[in-house]
Amino acid sequence: MLNPALIDLLACPRDDSPLVTDAEQLKSKGGQAVYPLLGGIPFLFAEPGVALDEWRGRYHARLQQVAEEIRRLQETLARDDLHALTRKRLEDSVSALTVHIDELKTLLEPLDVTHLTADHTTYLALRTRLPEDQGLETYYANLHRDWCWGDEENARSSELVQAALAGHDVGKLLVLGAGGGRLAYDLHQAASPELTVALDLSPILLLTAKHVAAGETVSLTEFPIAPRDMASAAVPRELRSPESAAPGFELVLANALRPPFRPGSFNTLLTPWLADVIGASLADQAARWNQLLAPGGQWVWFGSHAYRDADPVQCLSLEESAAIIADAGFSEPEITEAEIPYMVSPASRHGRRERVVVMRMTKTTDVAAPARHVALPDWLVKSDLPVPSAEYFRVQAAQTRIHAFFMALVDGQRTIGDMARLMEEQRLMPAAEAEGTIRNFLIRMYEDSRGYSTF
Ligand SMILES: C[S@@+](CC[C@H](N)C(=O)[O-])C[C@H]1O[C@@H](n2cnc3c(N)ncnc32)[C@H](O)[C@@H]1O
Image (cartoon, rainbow, N blue to C red; front, side, top):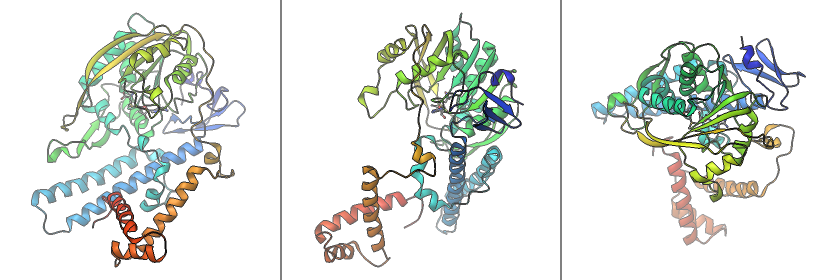
């Protein structure tokens, strides 16, 4: 049963019309657009079918990948030259990964993968479809920080944001890119907003947040980047919140760049560790966030300020960020900085300290709404439009043909020298030149293949 106070704020991410509930889903007023609930969380992507298929694909691919990892470990365990400790470590990894598959299946059961049967090889071939920067378990480590060992980090973050909000009415709070949801939860418990909406695009993060905020315990193995010792390589963790969230703590799965809310819905908007990773210019974000705020509403930026972009114009300094925000209908940001621990897992040798930025600004004027954000062109989203023959695709196609030719030469017998002579016989390249080219190509294939096969 969805909270009516949340439904009142929702708008169709396609045409901005209000949404209404209809059994276990949400509908635009005219009924043209239908949005499901995923494990009870509104799934408000503009193309919900495509987004659901994508997440299912990533989920299925991840399960296949873990199963493949287990298979390789078992293959290695068949060797008789392993040190006893190495054998134990590998056996422990097999057990932990087997448990992890079950954990993922339990948590992501709402994604329902039963109709997907593509095997591991198919997913490898398709991997360009799944952006590396937002796979199924991207930011998975945040869940353990949020709901298990991160008391100090969580408290410092919450204190800094609360200090910025002190003396200002929070009203209705929207947290964009809420991740595992801890900061949104802490603010909801401490600052008593009228309503807190935590939005993210990752199902694994928000499904976990939903369970723990309801007072349930979620079992999830932690795999630290740099385990302290053998026992730390895979640590069974119990994720839980200090207490159930007070009423009015709501979750929404959606793209923040297509925020599914009516204009002026919120009094406070928080973007924790989001603005410099979201992949949209700050000017574009500021204009979008301006639209979401009621007159006099406030925006709090929190987190790292680390712009890395191929476009040098977008590699912003703090001064430029403040000026861009003030130009988008906000007051001059009030800026504070503090050094806090960041992702310091007790099981890992890896951990950071970050000099974080907190900026608070008040909306002073309405600005024009930016154009609707388009993540993918129509021909990728719809199945009945021709795929354009772009220059990039033509180059890729030519490269793929050359790669296929090289790969066809690999028969388990030929040497690099044999292949180079064949290239010369076919008048494709002089043998001396072909040798280097083939070697470089095979080095790349060999390095790509490491982790998937043994030579
Ligand atoms: C660096 S993490 C920060 C997570 C959380 N705020 C925290 O401090 O732990 C960035 C978060 O933004 C989310 N995110 C990135 N792009 C997004 C988008 N376009 N819409 C919604 N969420 C997004 C990611 O899924 C991730 O949870």
